Image 1 (cartoon, rainbow, N blue to C red):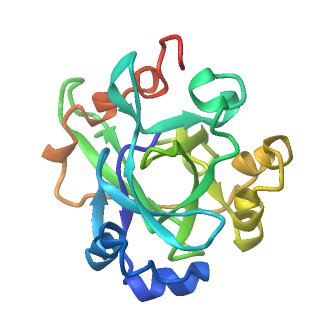
Image 2 (tube, rainbow, N blue to C red; image 1 turned 180 degrees about the horizontal axis):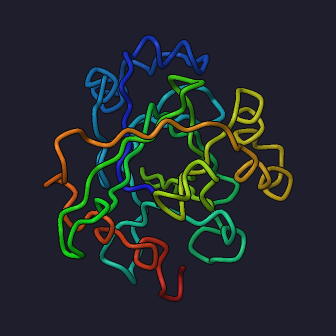
Amino acid sequence: MCSRFELNVAPDDLLARFGLEAPPDDDAATRSVLAGLPKAEIRPTDQAPVIGPRRVPVALSWGFRVDWDAKPLINARAETLAEKPTFRRFVGHRCLVPATGFFEWAAVPGAPARARKRRHRIARPDAPLWAMAGLVDGQGRFTVITRAATAAMEGLHSRMPAILGDARAEAAWLDPERPFADVRGLLSAWDGPLAVTADPDGPSGAGVGQADLFSTSGALGPGPGG
């Protein structure tokens, strides 16, 4: 899963990396979000810049809203996007979610079962700024797509964000002319290196219960829309 991520980059570097135009003057929300970069931690319901086919960043809130779950749907499983009613109608509304890292909380080896968990930062050593695959709902919100963990990640968690490997994959994911069936393989194609860094000061208070804050079942929605 992915319930926290980082965008530790200056606005100009974000625009340059993804070949973006600056948001228009009347888009005060996006300009404000960009002005707030670098961002050390982005949480569910926070606004973050996402990228669509027009290559202009737009500030959207993280997490779809549904009637059958009080929690925002911050993640969507790559394996069932085309089958789950909640997400099936949005598979043509694809976006890039820029990131410089994401976070997972895991138990400290040897610690009691109820002990606090330690936060780990996961990043790409081969790319300082990259994109997670996402969907938008047309109502000002986005969700991050997740996939089964790669070998580099599975020791920490069984799920991870669907990382798009390079600019070609990013462009294909955004292409509105390409049906979802043609691009869904991109969600599991990347298998590159990950740099995992644990917080140095022991168990993290911020991570207490983090793994359960938006659990896999809750985030994906067991209800009729999921």
